[in-house]
Amino acid sequence: MTVSAGGRRLDITLDRSASVPLYLQLSRAIEQAIATGELVAGDRLENELSLTSRLGVSRPTARQAIQELVSKGLLVRKRGVGTQVVQPQFSRDERLSSLHDDLLAAGKVPRTRLLGSRIGPLPAELADQVSLPADDQYLQLRRLRLADDVPLAVLTNYLPARFALDPAELERRGLYDCLRQHGITLKLAHQRVGARLATDAEAALLGETPPLACLTADRFAYDDFGRLVEFGRHIYHAAHYSIRSSLAV
Image 1 (cartoon, rainbow, N blue to C red):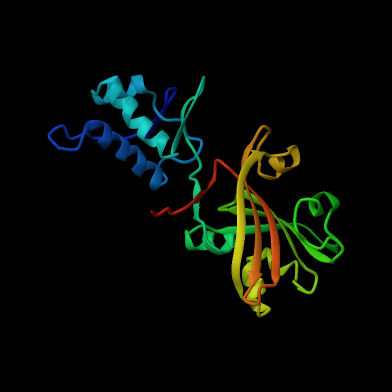
Image 2: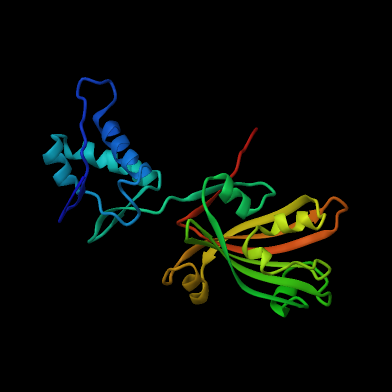
C-alpha cells in the first residue's frame, strides 16, 4: 500500500475472467484491507478517478464498489475531504445483558471510567418521568464505557440503596456481573429506545463536538421475585453503536 495526495493506494488485482463482478471484487479487496488493519479509521481512500485510471475500471464500477462499503458503514464520504474509513460500529442484540459482557463476547476490550457515585433520592426532573418512589434512597452510578479505547456510551443507573456495590469494582467489571456476585438474578426488563442530540457535556465525554446524534435507552430491570433491580438511562454514540432486533410473523 502506498500513500499519495489522493489517499491510500491499495495493491489490488482484479480478475476479469471471474464470474464475480468487478465492483464486488474491488469492494471486497477494500473491505479486506479494513478487516486486516491495512486501512484504519480516519484513513483516506484513493479517489474514484485515481482508482479508475490505475485499475482500468469504469467510474460507475468504482463508485458502486465504494457505495457498497458506505452502505455497510465502513466508509464515509465527506465533502472537501474525500472517502474515509470510519470506526466500525458495535451492533448489539436486544436482550437482557450487560454491555460490558457483550463487548467481551464481540472480541472488544471494554473499559469503564466511573464519573460519579452517590446515594440519595431520585433527581426531581427524573422523578416526574418514571414510576418509582421518589422519596426512596437510590444508589446513582454514572459511568463512561469505552470499547477498544473508543468512547461508546454514557451510562447512568439508579439502584435501590440496599445494594452495597463497590464503585472501584464497577471500573473492572460490568454492573450485572457485580449484581450476580451479590446473589441477584435478573429475570425481566422493559426498555424504551429513542434518539436525540447529546448535550455539550455528553458530547465531550464521547470525544466529539456538538451536534452529536445519540441513541438512548431507558431500562427497568427486575429480579426473579419481581423487585426492581435497576433503572438505567443510557446514551450511545450513534456512529459506533446500533441495536439489532429480530422480527417474526
